[in-house]
Image (tube, rainbow, N blue to C red; front, side, top):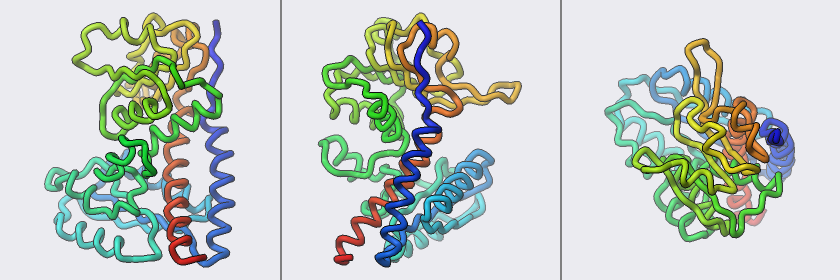
Amino acid sequence: MTARIIDGKALAERVRGEIAARAAGLAARGEQPCLAVLLIGSDPASAVYVRNKVAGCEKAGIRSLRFDYPADAAPEVVMAKLAELNADPAVHGILVQLPLPLQFDEAAVLEAISVEKDVDGFHAENVGRLSQNQEAFIPCTPHGVMKMLESEHVPLSGAEAVVIGRSNIVGKPMAMLLTNAGATVTVCHSKTRDLAFHTRRADVLVAAVGKPRFVTGDLIKPGATVIDVGINRLPDGKLCGDVDFDSAAAVAGAITPVPGGVGPMTITMLLENTVISAERAARRKGL
């Protein structure tokens, strides 16, 4: 068996075209979508992520504001900027790039972002609404995974789904989304005693564990859909996911590559959340 490749890059391009059209329509009515991004410190990976997000905004017709702070920035300075952005009606989305320097209380920073502008979906109110299957901003990576499963017509109602990883950013919201879609969901993690017992039953397997090539073909049910959320840099500089692609592709029915799989969809869903926020603002104004 050779798995079908789920092309996240191609899907992202299609979705971004739709987002750009929605953004142009909003701008024509006087409500140009706007995303504000705060970067604190000089972490190289964070700088790349922010640059990619700003570039994605520009291509989609979304106005972007970028605020850079040194690693020793005082938390009260950043909190003051967040309050200012919360009060600015021209700003529809606010994102603070994680991780933060040690002097910051990450939870407090995320809670300081207005829930109406929390386009990362990390505010406790959005998390709670998601858990109750109510309208909410959905964290971008799990949201992108759901779009990919939808595009591939992967049946989720009644399916066995396994998520490896329980982070607040991917694992937990991913499990909630799959549950809301009708799947029977198991969340595995570092304390799971018999990982293979669970993964070999999975019709849908989502790997978000942060370990290079952790999921091998012998852990996968034949014909399963395998979603690789991980992105790891090897000593030789090459990128790989949490799934050992070659051995997994020989068993799975469908699989996402790294790069070119989930990654492009993450920023795409950030752009969509920003446009959704702008659409809500336009409705409130009667535009």
